[in-house]
Length: 91
Image (cartoon, rainbow, N blue to C red):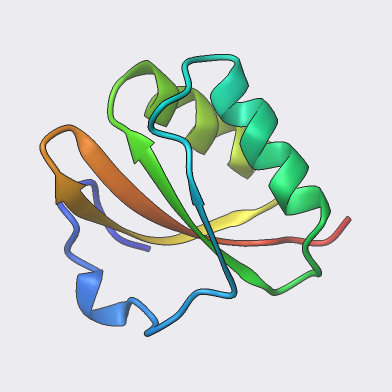
């Protein structure tokens, strides 16, 4: 797993299985959108999630881990925006 500075960017796959941009949403909708998307995925599939740093990032990363999914990597996209690579865990 990478740190917030994007040090695992080289481990990023060419194409995650799915892509979701939630930068236009605020909490709690950021996690609601993420959770609904993950529910439609199969175990082991990956989601590239684009999210704003701050409250949304903190809440979504904590909730994703609490739900049993794994954050494999993260990388910066632009100022205050990051992309997470999430692997869906067991249901």
